[in-house]
Image (cartoon, rainbow, N blue to C red):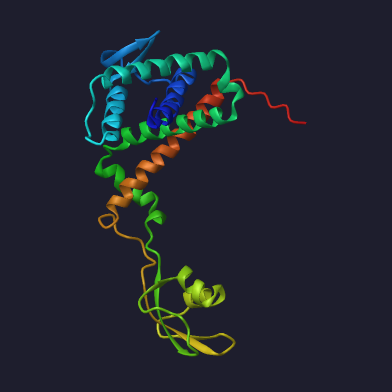
Amino acid sequence: MMRPWLLAGGMLAGAVLAVFYMVRVPDVPQPVDDAVAWVGDRPIARESYERALEAVAGDRKAGTLREGDRERILDRLIDQELLIDRAIELGLHERDPQMRNQLASAMIDFLVRRAEDDASGASERELREFYAAEQFRFERAAQYRLAVEGAAVPLPDGFLLEKEIAQRLGPSVAQQVVGLNVGESLAAGDGAYTVQLVERRGGDVASFEEAREAVEAAYLRRRGELAVRDFLELARQRTSIVVELD
């Protein structure tokens, strides 16, 4: 019996491979020099084969491959290519909504991963320029320490975010707290109690050094977003699109 990982993993990998076959993303080198097999004019990359081997080994209790696993896995990858070819010949990618969604998602994932890989070696200057242009991304959320006098109110010690204050005291009180100066108070609960702002922290932009990991992560995400946008813009320019909405 075929293991579930081969069925599920094969569907996902098949979707990605089908995208490569149909969309023919430009400037993506074929792994000609490192193929473990060819199916027609398409190679099965050694990297894909090695990932499949690792997945099967991880599925074993002993964490190792059994005799014959390598040959069976390669056969499954070849079968996958043959099935993809036939599915495309039958036009399943055009008729099956689920497959269309999978292909679109796989294409986006591919573009994002490729862009993030290209951007992973960003220089210090590039990261600092991104930080300077996108500082809003690195604002530290303001936090408030409150003191309540009057009726018993379930308010924990320590600092709270605005949304946490809203959950406990209501949105209206939270909005008023944000506008208080340290030491000021407001009446709440129809005058049943008062809330004093004891201390405020945050609400500023973290320095580049403090936010460096977040800057790198945001930079990679942004490059991925731009890669998808640029691909779609180029594809629209190169493709005849006729809209016939009434």
